[in-house]
Image 1 (cartoon, rainbow, N blue to C red):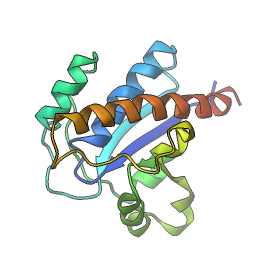
Image 2: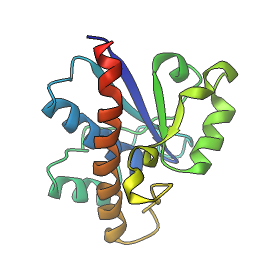
Image 3: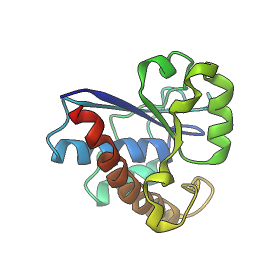
Length: 160
């Protein structure tokens, strides 16, 4: 069985991308694929490097059984485009920022997370940072649906 590596990316790596990382980790664990799927997250900005995820994201995740506490924010780097098979952005601004960092031959690795949940008819995972707790619940809903779709999309690659 092949290995696949995925990095989720949002602006500061304290809300959306660590939530997606935690959701995907659990889905991969439950599928018995932990040895074959490597998962990480990063931010396009450098404001929160080394910080734990937003407390609201941690609380919302914990209520659904996700542990975001060990995660720490980091900034995406050009090397990540060599390390990861897929760089999954939360919104169009992240895609634009990633295209500026990515070596031109590796830009095809960039995808929007919500592409993997077409049934939701939503293009982006909305940033909950400046909103209330409901925004963090919405992020979890979107991540659960889209990460399930992403795992389904990765399965054929793992079997190659």
